[in-house]
Every structure is written in C-alpha cells, then in structure tokens.
Length: 184
Length: 184
DNA sequence: ACCTGAACACCGTTCAAGT
DNA sequence: ACCTGAACACCGTTCAAGT
Image 1 (cartoon, protein in one colour):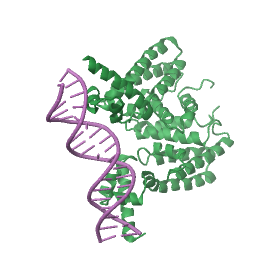
Image 2 (spheres, rainbow over the protein chains, first blue to last red):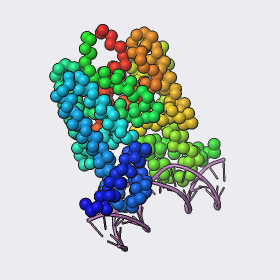
Image 3 (cartoon, helix red, strand yellow):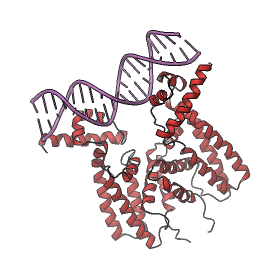
Image 4 (cartoon, chains in turn brown, blue, cyan, yellow):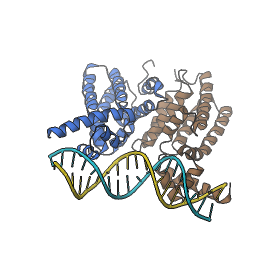
C-alpha cells in the first residue's frame, strides 16, 4: 500500500471509531468521510461495505476475547470460566451500539465480513459451555447458539439508554439461570 | 372527519399494517403512501409522526392485553397469571419487527405517542409481579421495569431470524429465573 | 377541509475523470 | 495507484398551490 493510501486508511479508521462510538453501527458513512477530510469514494475504496469497516473496528477486540478464552479454559474452574467469558462477551458487544443485531445477522450470513468473528465467538463459548456441562455445572438443554442469543439479548438491554443501569443486575439473573443450582 | 378523509385514513392504516408487518417499524413512509395511492403529505396529515402511526397500529393489541391482565389478576393463581402475562407480552412485541426497541425508547420519552401504552403495559406487569412476590412465588429483587427490559430482551431474540426458532426455549429459561424455585 | 407535487436536505452506492 | 466530484436513486419532512 502506498504511503498516502496507508495514511488515509489509518485516519479513516480512527475517525470511524469515534463516529461509530457516538452514533452506533448505523452511523453515516458520508459523515465519517467528511470528518476524515477524505472523498466518500476513498472510504469505499478502503472499505467496500459497511461490514468491512466494522469488521476491522471489531476484529482486535474479538481476537483478544478468543485469546482470553484459551487462558480461561486451562487456568480456571469451568463455572468461573463460563461466567467470566459471558461477562467479557457482553462487554464486547457493547463496544458500539447496535453490535448485537449486526452480529446476529452476520452469524447467519456466510458472506458477511463479520461471519468469521461470529463463529469464532460462538465456538469459544460452546467449548466453555461443554466443559461446564460435563462437570455438571451448567444446564444441559442449551448450546453455543443459545449462549450467543442470550449474549445478544443482554447486550440489547445495554443498548437501550433507559435500561442500561439495570444491565448488570439482569446479567446476574439471566446468567444464573444457565447454571445448575449448587445448593440443591 | 369528512367522508373522503375517513376513507383515506382507513385505507392508509390497512396498507401501513401490511407494510410494517413486512418491513418492520422502520418501514418507508413514502412506500406506504405510494402503496395506498395517496399523496405523501396526506399520510403526514393523518399521522404527523411515525410514532403516531405505530401507536394506532399497536393500540388495539395493547388494550386487549390490559383487559386480559385484569382477568388474569382475579381468576388465576399469581404464578400462572405472571407467566401467562409475560407470554402474551412477548407475543405482543413480536407483532412487528423492531417493536421492542421502539417501546424501550417510548417508555423513556413522555412526548412519544406510545408513552401511555408503554406505561400501561409496565404497570400491568408490575401489579402481577407484586402479587406473585407477596405470595413468595417470584424473586424480590426485580421490579416492573426489569420485567419490561426482559420482555424486550426476549423480543429481540425473536426479531432475529436466526434466533427465532429458539425464542420459546429461551423464554422458558429466562422466565424460569424470575420465579422462586418451588422444589427447594 | 382536504389533498398534492415539488422542494429541501439528507442518505448509500457507483463511476468517469483527474493526478 | 490512488483520489474525487458528481450523478443516481432513495429517504423524511415541509409547504405553497390547488379543489
């Protein structure tokens, strides 16, 4: 990549990060190009679709999450590992408003630029879930896709300004329902 | 209202119902006017905002729900009444795609045309919840707003085509978490 | 009273023309 | 190679002009 193109790319990405942080995943691409002092077609040249741009914005965080999953799996009890991973996943989808709906549709669309990130996330969760189920710590009637849907549902709560203050409380309640009651 | 205006109003509403059923609450208003063979400004005359149109589309169902809540309250055990009401509420928000997000913001915005419907729905749920809590059937650390957020979260799952098949299953799991375990 | 076309300010997407 | 302005087809919203 030519030096001037690289500079545009980096600058575009930085501006996109702040605009998406403010307006969510549906932010105006025109607005991003404008704020980056770059022609709109230049944005399209670097990021041919909205998904492609968001994929770059989210990739780093997903990779961190995947790496951390490996650590959790080897170093922590299955119960704690699963809950910690759910906590991290909910934090991840709340990086930008609207990520949950984006990921839900990307999961079902193999052509989406985000499809790989979604399946990675799902299979990481499925592994931790399986381990907890094998040890009798998690209910047996759920799978990785259910986990994904539940992360999305909790993330949706966090996306609504009026519900955001309750999201931690509701996380505890909903996630609690996935675990086997140890006092029984 | 003049006879011709009434005819336009009724026709507009019927067309809007089918277009919103197909494209969700964000459906193009232009498209609705076009399909109704009516000038776009005529739609605006009858429904000055998108909220006003959706409010009319949803009102009937909310009223049914409120009426049914009264029945549930007097004729059924608190536990069953609460679960049935949650079931009906989730069905209600799934009448059109995107209703959950619409209601979440309308609940926080007293100027919204849907604000009244939202607070009605919330207080109906709060009443049933209180009764179940008084009888020791529901956990004590939740309130009507939590119930509303949870209905929204489950409704969000139903709005995602890839998760829709799991929504009944996840309803049982999440709602189960709100009830006190009777086997203890 | 009620209806309408046209105007305005946006948006995403594409492409011929520039350097 | 890379960038850009302009064009196209949409959208929501408003308003002067018609009947």
